[in-house]
Image (cartoon, rainbow, N blue to C red; front, side):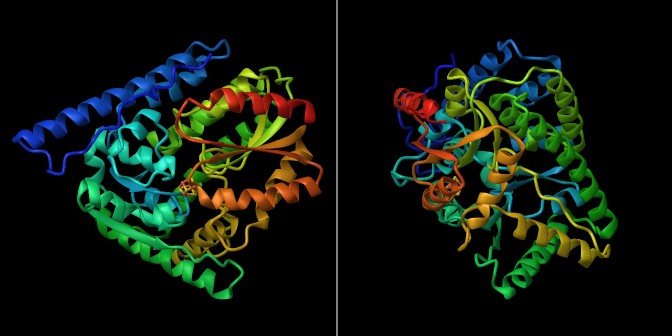
Length: 429
Ligand code: SF4
């Protein structure tokens, strides 16, 4: 049984006035405390459930404890001894931050309680991840005071700064990074490189550090080792040895510690899973909108029904740090070019004009493992993945793979219908 989701929370109205000593400030303080309490309770319930699983091993304690810790920017910065920068999306190379001893904190909201605490008046069909992030900002107002890096990927992310400013006042400092959406256009690579180089200069300024090729090379090495650990976990998952809930807990904790410590912990977890027997249920591949802790509703349903999740292509899962960086020229400019190219060329996000390449990794997983079908997790309001799912379904059918699109949101009311559809999918595999 999964933990009880908190979906009946009343919508909390955010005060128009900023916090202070007056009545409006006191009310803002009460709203903040209530939202923060509910968000923490939801995360605790999920972690308690995970901790009670029979396959919990001491090697997994690190990830459970990371998720249980205070991850406010101030606490994170004090723990890591680094300035924290808010990041909305993985399009930009993480190595740029690491090379400057900055800590990127990806802000995707996975909390159902936070989504229910979001300010009123937001669009009804808003991306639930960003609605949840808005509610998270009610509980943790200091987020608005960070430096933000916002790649202009989907419309919700591109418009987030404007939406957030309506409720929280202007975000302190925002660096937008413009994404060219036609990869096949020869000018796109050049344009993206200039955006990445511009971000590098910006991050140097806000870090106050003079970094160069040595720092970039060190960051590429550090992230490469973490990538190797995640790759090993992904290969073990192809064999059915890593349950989906643990895999997504591990990837979900990535931004809550230094990359080397996380990579070492991921290696220890891989050692543990290597000795576990493979799951025996029908194997599926997960695609679609990101699954973010603690909203593991779909993972719980798959687990309860005996499916084995053998892979995924989500930016919150296998795609977290999945890009290999091909190094040719080791000058600072050469390293920047390699980082820009690997990020842009290798990205599977469906925000580009042409997205047929999304089929490749699924077919590759199916050739390596007993993947019988694809479960497509579609969050209501996530238009890029919704549009993408139609062509993907057709292409998968042409390759003999079954496809199930599960449209859902951050509520628990659809658990029954989702479960029924997953049960009906099973005999078709
Ligand atoms: S791509 Fe989908 S899930 Fe991701 S931020 Fe945009 S709408 Fe949300």
